[in-house]
Amino acid sequence: MTGRTRSGRRAARRKAALVPLLLLFFAAPTVGQETPDVPAGDATIRGRVLHSRTGAPIPGSEVALYALPADAPPGLRRATSDANGAFAFEDIDADPRTTYLLGTRYQGVAYPGARVQFEPGENERAVEVRVADVTDDVTAARLVELRMRIDWLGGRLQIAETLVFENAGERAIMVPPEVRPGKRALTRLELPAGAGALSGPLGVVPEGLVRAGLELAWWGPLLPGKHEIEYAYEIAGATGAATLDRSLPASGVRVTVLSPQGGPELSAPGLSAADTISLLGRSYTPWQGEVADGPLSLALRLPAARVAPDAVKLAEVRIIGELDEAAWSGREEHVLTVAGTAPVVGGEGEPLWTVPLPPDARDVRFGIRESSATVTPSGDGALAVLGPLAPGETTLDVSYNLAGGNPFVFAREFSSHLPLLSMYLADTGRLGLESDRLHNRRSVRTSDRTYLHLEAFEVEAGERVELEVTRLPRRTQLPKSATLLAMGTLAAVAIFFLVTPLRGTMDDDGVEPPEAGRARRERDSLYAAMADLEHDHETGKVDDHDYASMRADLRGRALGLLEGERRGEAAEAGPAAARVATADRFCRACGHGVEPDDRFCARCGKPLTPDAPA
Image 1 (cartoon, rainbow, N blue to C red):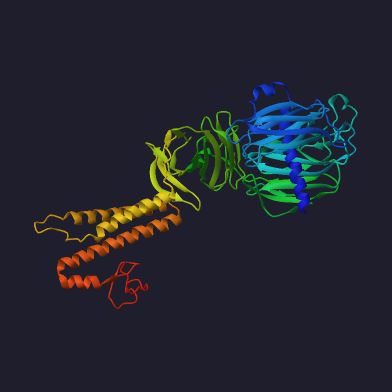
Image 2 (image 1 turned 120 degrees about the vertical axis):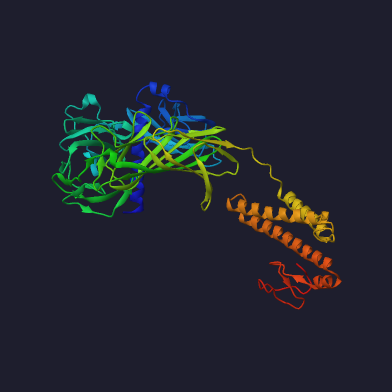
């Protein structure tokens, strides 16, 4: 497959994903009243609505701007093109994390126009929305590909299908309901026996897709070029062996069937298995080929399953969080274990497992790693795991955002007993933590971050675990020049005390001389400063460059104190000892005493300067 083909397919998929949103834009006038405005800011998106073939401006066309912010609910704003086809959306947010979708409707057909994300520092973007004339003649269209994804939910099969069409004409194809009798549809497909619960992306069945019994007919709209429509259905009561027979409306249709790892086993005459791929956190085997003529027949062997919710246990929950001025960003890993040797499913209409979410969680995303299980939101603010879950360990990933505050209170409850709750909070160096249930552990450092680590053991079902996080004021840091000046001043003070003759540690009456007390206190302060420096470097508060410089300075001052104390002791011992001490030298690297004729240190092996003490 060429890079151009892959790019074209990705572009077609992006356009197909925009169409359900555009249908929501134009579904009814009340939509704009129920949806808040887009986020405010100082940016502008300007554009024109133009005819795709002639380039002529299209006046009076309603344009919709849909915003998907990272930390706020979606927003919607509308505009109408002027006599030159121009429109503008002003005073909008330029946050690079916000995605804007534009589209318009022309002659009854919704057109996805552009997808905009501002670059950092950018506050204006120009776009074009191209529209085409509409026809009800379907002869320029043909079905070129059918993609199927099979998921086994234990007792029922879920089939997601994507139809890829190619419109070789210059007009959009749409057969309105009033003229459909006696007209050809873009395609007619026969669904497998027992198919039910037809649905589409975002809960919206594609426009123009009509079901009558087991027959699906699609009447458009189909824009010029290559485009896709997506839908899904279920087959209930699927146990043991099952057969999916599909009749295709034309020959030469390329078919791809994705069967999940772990079952059901698939036999597909005319299709060849390819390398395993990962999709939506699950592993699938692709079966690919071209159906020249006749029906597509798929034979499935479904694995045995048991209705045993009690076999599922929650082993551990790991929460990784980051708090900034505006919001909390959290990611959770729920480790589920299944006892036994066969997959488990929930009862009729009941989920196998539920995960309660924080009440005000937004931008919720979820998935199960390497599993054929299905996860869906439930109506009570939780996630429902429908199964099947394979024996052993399975990890459910959940991420969401919460509105921030100071202090910020993070609270979680779980639907069952939890042996271990591990929490990792990104350390900014100015966080205060308080919790009656979570206990501090040693910080965890990754290649680029340091995380505060807390744990709670044996959390009961329904028990509320709270953590209060307070953002402390920023500490005022001295400029680097001022820091160096302060270090130099401390060094000068240390030298002053060192050059003052020391009279020993005690007077004759057993009282410690003031000079010895000052030297001892300075030595203890240096040791404490070195210990604090090691801790700050370990937790990431001091970088490697500053750590090396400050450690060398503290080490040099400590060695100087040692030398002063030794000289003082020699002076107290008498003139002969003082002469020996004066003649002694010390290694600058490790502080070890050396003889006058030594050229290298006997302890560390470093070369010695002829006349310089430590």
